[in-house]
Length: 130
Image 1 (cartoon, rainbow, N blue to C red):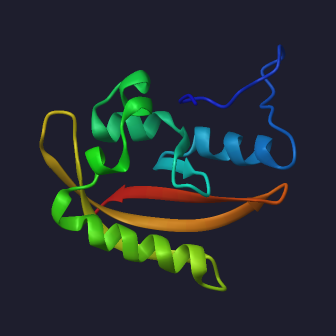
Image 2 (image 1 turned 90 degrees about the horizontal axis):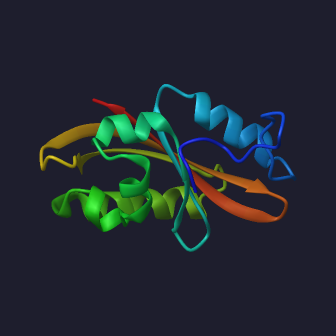
Image 3 (image 1 turned 180 degrees about the horizontal axis):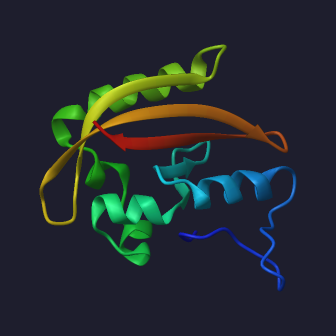
């Protein structure tokens, strides 16, 4: 996991089966964006996510969602995740607070989108300050 996509010796994102374009788009996005696997584990995030939350890449990689989502808003995230995961359209939106490294809250609009790559499902989460 890194703030930039895995790349070959020429800097071309790698990963196969559609992952290169997914990683490339997320890495270049101005929106704080994370990718989670089917278990909910954080598999990728971009530099905008680090900037929004104030963590460097190594710190952010070691955090769980419980450490980032405001405790009072955990149910909002769970509900939106269920909607995005289970709905035919594969997407959901919500607004909640994230907790920055310095302890302050930031209100964000989350856009959750289910994507399938090589038979595996991922959840892409974009966070935009509200």
